[in-house]
Length: 231
Image (cartoon, rainbow, N blue to C red; front, top):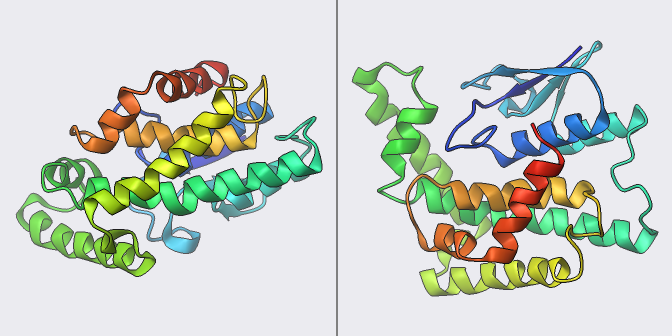
């Protein structure tokens, strides 16, 4: 049996990480037999990140590499799509995972109200006596990385404006069909859906959580994915 090494459930989701949720959706869709194994510290994992899939042969890191492996086993995540639609799907995945995701991280890690909740959810393995100074250093490291990709260099209004263009693009597709590429979920939904769900699930109310919660189209889309591929 396959084993998905994942961050634990948090904030009402299968995992606090949308990439772990994505992988769980792909595994469920594939029909493979699998189980979850929760980790808080991925430092001994390949790439020192999660998700990781334990296959009969090896530990396989990264949700995209896991997708490749599942496809090599016969799963068709984009069954019936044209080559142009597959290209569009790939672009949507990159938009969600390489742009929208960074806004969510900043909304959580850069938020002084959310940070104590994250600290006491993600870092319970660090003794309470030293948890605050150790995790503050981790937080600074994460925020430096966000500065490196440029997201935190924008003003709040600039940042929300950039994000809004992405959300409008997703919405434009969902006005046409229940899922991004048509009537059934495909790979794009298994990436974009968890990213939007993570934005909605941030454990304090922020402009981003309100943006998703108050958008009937996007919120119902998140719920449809969860119903179509329950994990």
